[in-house]
Image (cartoon, rainbow over all chains, first blue to last red; front, side, top):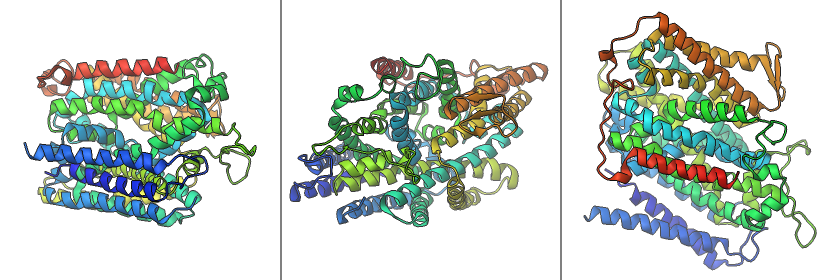
Length: 64
Length: 555
């Protein structure tokens, strides 16, 4: 049966990578109330890590 | 609010994944049980998160932020007084009968315990309710996307319904549940940053407390009298109406959530599903309510130019506050392109999880409890699989119709609570007596349920609140529709209990042997857990201690 951690892991890896890339390429991009904070960098990083974590857990489960 | 290309890319990636998950699961569907019940094979961490996510629809996200801005931290009562105790009770005391009876749905349990007419009544009212719930969710989303992004209302409604239909049709309940977990993660990813940023900008919790009236930042201190708190509800109405009847009615008898737990792989997992789900559930107020409260504080702060940091959104008349737009206007103030796409996708995800939850509950109840029971008995299973799939399509179409009906009403949460007061509140009385008092008879349950539902309607029709109800006259005026809803639920519940008890006493009971596995005291609950922390009772105590601490913290 499909291990849900695989698709959701990939989803967050891709999502995190997109948001993180925006944060790296346009560090000055901000909304009216978030001046001086690179929101995309701080949010994209954890998403990427979370996706990676799910993938590692799924990989470990399939190699037991 | 304007979206950048990257935001559309994120939205597209999400759509591709939800449909992709449905596609990957399509081969698993070969019987009606696979399609409608997931074949009882899903791991407990998945059922637990789906249990929470199916309830976390768009109207919940939008409504909770709206209520946060309107009522303050008291809104958390919906979680810390309402949902959590009810969820714990469900897992601990009711799940053994749902799962152990091998019933395929809540109405089917009623048939096993009582008789055909109680099941028929419940199946019909439930089917109507799920269609309206998903319609309301769809309406909420369509309206919001139209207001915020200028997208066409009809297009939003039809396109999002088509995507939900695609993945539930392909993979059935398994696909709905799997996607609900992904949607749950996405909702957290999309809205937790908003809560953090908004709260931080408003000066943290202390900054919020210093800027708001005290009755918006304390959940318990102003509960003594209805006139002192922004909700217009007094302590008894809140505790009995919301805390006891409405929440227990919803979480313990609503097949939409019970179905998630019933899909678990064994009895122990089924009982742990609600208990584990309760842990993230109790922290959701920090993501869904806190931004609304912070918004009110931000509206009182000014920036360097003397301009307000944030203005509460107004309705088209330019005078009244449109609380339903608080969440999206906050997003536009805090999220740059990129994260804005994630937040918007989270909103879409919440809508889809809520709608798929309703559609998958609707097709199961229709197929097994209406079609198989009254229209065509004893057909081969492949026939019911086909009917289940067709019902999925019909359910989506009916929901779209309900969305247009809901367009005529404005306050989504009140309307939902009203419907639950009619349907779920008396049902909880029926279950409580049916599961825990073996003397309860079939006729008692049926007449109790019908008269309870009637009492709910009459209470609403004879009282007024904010101009609502009172179609048959006005015996009492409530300070708020919230208070009215709570009392509608209380009246329905009490009537159901009294009528069920009286009728049961004068009708013949069933033999004990007929009710094995269905009633407390006649059922041996097996304990399959080996590890102490996996025992339901241990988990329940842990959950309750945490939620009591939260209540004290924000009292």
